[in-house]
Image (cartoon, rainbow, N blue to C red; front, side, top):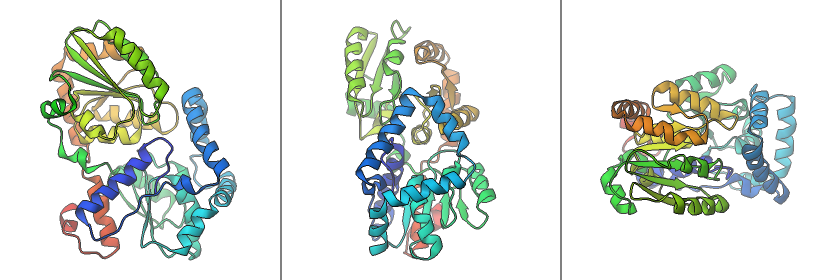
Length: 377
């Protein structure tokens, strides 16, 4: 169960579903958007408020993130009570027909279901998959049977705060399509792109950020390249990018603009470099394919931690303003050795099999025969 705010949480849930269908087809899997079970006013407010803050007031979002990182508190208990009222339909649905196991890739359903599990009303074990590098306090609730984190540091953070909870650093689940690597030449042919140096510009699933400024920074780029700009679900942003692309096109600079794409593994695989905001799922997807990253400034909260982590690995470098993307890539374009070192660091850090490993953990918990359990755990 994910929550459809941004796209990363749902992508992680769908990745586990995909891995389960491949590795353990005998287990029935259903992916739900937990927000669909909230009251109508709550759904509208939750989605719109987050996007409003992320686009207009990222510093305020960062302040709220830091203030609420202490774990369950008096304020969080009040919010939990309010959320439980707004999501009575979810509680009723789960309790009327409890599944064998519940896996949550967003903190909201964890917050609602944890008290039911703790009180014994809910017999289903609950797994919480933290989809960012840092397990923020809002994820952490007594009653969750198992947490899955991106790495050992995240596991230690949870273990210090919830001493009775099992934590497994299995990685953030990404679609198995990211584990199959990417033959750039073949994928460019499939996508109708010329077979030359390709830069992928991303604005996240919701289309947040100044994508036109990034595109315009490649005007006069010193080399023959293809620029692919993906605007996500933001139709206005996509339209602006398409208009700008008409003024940028030249024999040396080919520009392609897309909205939301379901085949991100192919677009990333066809690219040499990915320029993006530091969302957790996007980072681990790029690392899974071994693609070097240019990371824009964080828009508050968990993105700052994600950004520092990827840069610290050597798989990414920072770009402080959208207008700086083109000049920075021009420097890297002339330093192929540096780009290859970043790509190598990405390959070493990537955990493209995380979804399969999580699927194995689920199968083992349910005591279902699973061919790859011994190999993947």
